[in-house]
Image (tube, rainbow, N blue to C red):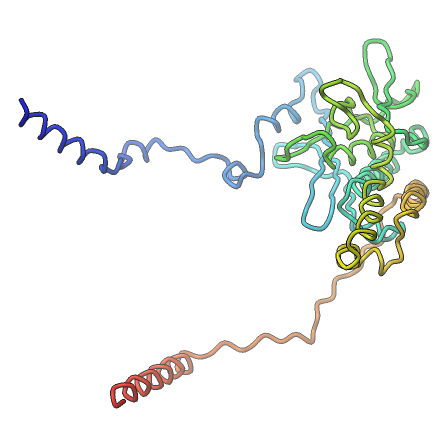
Length: 320
């Protein structure tokens, strides 16, 4: 009995290191996921909900207000889906904001608000609704909505002939935390006159525990108050870090207390002329020359010279 137990234990020890190999049947039946799922770029469950249209509405597409953040900029687009891919109606990026007087901080909350506003105004200008739906000039951070019959529209008043342009917020793979910059872009677009269904629950200033919303805090963020506050704090506490951190701001003479007026003027200029700037023809830099490729003989010669030097070194070592 003791011997039997001993052999069983030995077998157990052996078993723990067995590599589980996937059989041929596994690989035969394996189905790869969609490319954009494999890359981790698209959440197809979310995408289906945003794009699928009821059959009785025939070809009318659902429009998506797409917000994405790259390393240096915010991009807002209005897109709709066709069977062979998405079409972009309008797009705006915070790279265009220097045109409207905002040269630094192109990825913060205030900049995403400006980009959302620009995208909305540009779209409405394109579809001829910019005069009917002016949007909200008095920025107070509150959610604007109107009830017409059973429908709720997220604009201040609905025209009798033309209903507002409805788009749904597409956040991609970003986590929707309270106060996230995505909602800055959403607020910008909503104030620009687009009808985007939303609530205040994810805006900065909303407190989940007490279920209260502080609109003034949101308004402060739209005008870059949080940036100004940090600038003032750093200037007092650690000036060298302030010089490094806000070097771009100092270069463009952007003061902490002048941020609100700056963003107000940017909003005004965007409303005056949201149309995209003229495209410049791309001319490559002719001065840059690529090195000619080495021929096979040259490559072989280079390898041989390396070998020779190494051999010479080894010989010298042996002699020592």
